[in-house]
Length: 138
Image 1 (cartoon, one colour):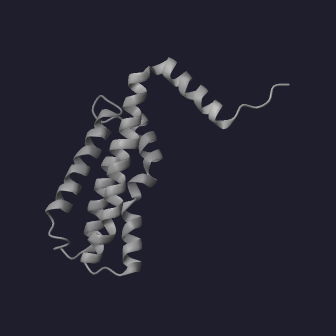
Image 2 (cartoon, rainbow, N blue to C red):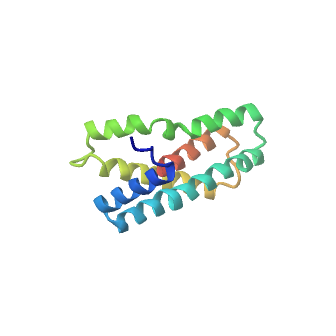
Image 3 (cartoon, rainbow, N blue to C red):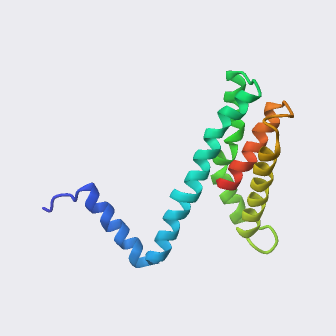
């Protein structure tokens, strides 16, 4: 009976299988996209929420609720994936949803950047803007 492979050996074998199936360039692109671009953008956006809401003098309970609202796009990833498979926008199943999320994200990030640290004074409006930005990243 053969001894089970170490976790490191199994991971190396898995990566080699992916590389033989998809190629090294594609794997490098995927790592850069998810660990680099999306990971950094998510970390920066999430870390900027607390100072943004503190500048608006939002209480802790309201901040927690606003954080939940802002993270709704992450909660709905599975639903949106199934929806995009079933209901195409235009002639394409994924392209329309990618464009809508990119447009929402750019508007959300732009309005957050142009807003003078919560000049609207409404934490729920800011939470929706953060949700639009997270929709772009999710």
